[in-house]
Length: 111
Image 1 (cartoon, rainbow, N blue to C red):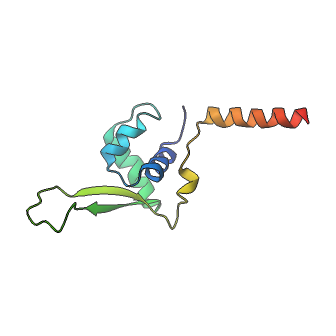
Image 2 (tube, rainbow, N blue to C red):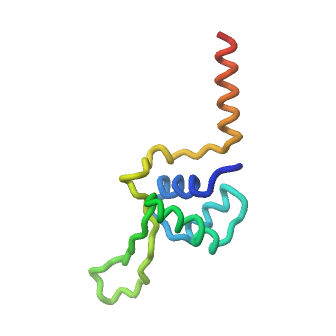
């Protein structure tokens, strides 16, 4: 399966909602060959952040409970002003796209 990593990130954020970089990494490895956490953060996520496609928000858990010792989480979110979430809900590999195009050509040839 061959997909651009940034497309996979947008797909995962659209499908699963805000996630940490570690959560994204665990899901990305199911879609393409293994990449490192450092590469994901320094190259992919920072580049997407600079393009204003995604941004980080802090999630502090239950802020009403002062005794709560939950560590705050930095979650990646899609910039909905710039990215259409619905368009990224499904992710097709290039091979699947080629198969769909071939099927469409077969249908046209039959007519």
